[in-house]
Length: 235
Image 1 (cartoon, one colour):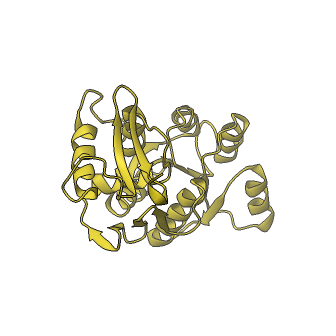
Image 2 (cartoon, one colour):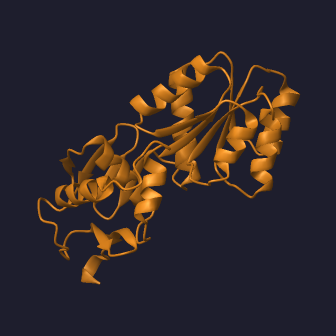
């Protein structure tokens, strides 16, 4: 998943970005003012926006209002030093999904970030199921038909992204945008390599589509990838 952090305190922004990268393994972009953050947000490639309230050029509330005015539904977690009830109500009414008062614990921020990303994908529970695959997003563990499968971090992130979209074709560009920050190599074949390895692991070492195995990752040439789900009864 990809997160945008809009925070003008460099040390705090870096701490948040490091926690998101090292824990959940998210891709993170940082902006140090509201105008830059708004320009980043307009790309619509984020799964969560973490937004400080006190920002130069365009404050957090103004940034939030413009994000929502553009009909962008990306979950927004506000960071604020204000503790007044009226301020909180105003933020929520303006379109914030949650808020944290400064100073805060990074562990709590990670927990809230994970919950908002899940809710944004329509999955309130941390354990996701598709066919006989189970993905525990808290433990970042995967099993199929009750058997644990060891994945690399990138393989896990690809599977977690696809499992939110069973039967939907996801392009290579979309995967790159949600799994990597702006520093990724646009010409890299990293996605193809990781998908190939992931497909082998999820298929027990066999990349072929087999009717008894309930999801399988398909490659659709020129279009992308799909987590295909066979219905029971061989349909």
